[in-house]
Amino acid sequence: MTLFAAVRLPREILFGKGQRHVLPAVAARYGRRAFVCTDERFATTTQFAEILAGLRAAAVETLVYDRTLPDVPRDSVAACIAEAMDYKPDMVIGIGGGSCLDMAKCAALLLSHGGRLQDYYGEFKVPGPTLPLIAVPTTAGTGSEVTPVAVISDPERTLKVGISSPHLIATVALCDPDLTATCPPSLTAIAGADALTHAIEAFTAAKRGTDPNLPQQHVFVGKSALTDHFALLAIRLLGRSLEMAYRDGSDEDARADVMMGALAAGCAFGTAGTAAAHAVQYPVGALTHTPHGLGVATMMPYVMTYNLAAAAPEIAEVGAALGLSDRNSSGPDALAHATIREVSRLFGAIGITPTLAELGLPEDRIDWTAEQALGIDRLIKNNPRPFDLTAMRRLIRAAYDGDMSAATMRQEQVQ
Image 1 (tube, rainbow, N blue to C red):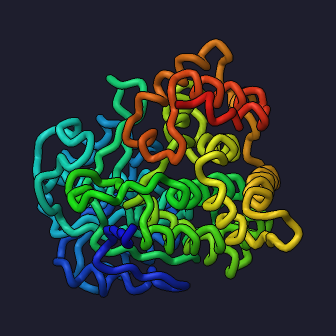
Image 2: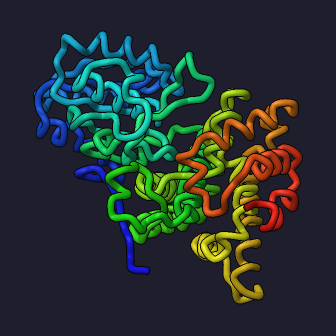
């Protein structure tokens, strides 16, 4: 099979200590009026005050929306747009965690094309380019600064919903690890585990690159040579520094590694997509109201175990990127098993919940969770090993009970 590669990224990615100080110069290239989306916490920081002062000094006016909520409730986007419509900004700047960046994407979309947010749910519904978007993350996890998706909570839907389009990719991703220095250990852990899950699922995703029209028909197209490059970089960086950043948030090198890891993971899954761990998290998150990163990380070792039958060589490569050696193992299969144990160990060391029961999933909702997860086709079709309803139920039961051996399942059980 010949090489296949696809990747969609911002026009410019700027990364490094102190990069937040160049935001005024970057913004001035796109106009003189900026609509800034952030949240109440970051809006009260001295760093945000310095950013606004720098923009004013560069003759860039700002209108600030600082009421972004977690998971971006649909109606909050309408309230945000109502404040910005008469302002007529030249650009949108998102500063904060993943929800702030997703709010900024939604603002740029609706200010450019109008309509209702729900008009754009799904893939390729955005009709054209939006206002320039500058994404400035203050956490290291979602990768939203480089991805083509915004995730929304819609009160009319049980599960969160996504808007996926290359037109949502930020024009500039500006990443300064100093902005993550105040993240508490729990947020560092959950966001970093989310990023590692993104990278592992992107690297072990199904290969779907046989039709040259695939990237024109789908936003997420499975693993490729380029997404693999970014995924392995993310796994190496997060493997060596996530636990360190969790234990000592003042470690600048660890903070930089984790933020670069989240960025690289976003570069990978923004084209490759994610798979079963994310599919299960959608209904689990709806029932338990727990953080997204916590749910996907809880599922990841079980999904990796399930995928051994179809992706052992790739899982072994994940282990090599995590620093494991196959010199003391009996081949790729043994290294793949060791990789799953190492991912479980790492997540345990940073406080990730090990089972769905401890996450709060009601036992009597296991079947419903399986049905909902199986219905998220854009994620399930990305998984390297296929699912039917029986297989999905058994996977979720295994993750509920903490029974890794039950997650394996024999190949003949899944057709």
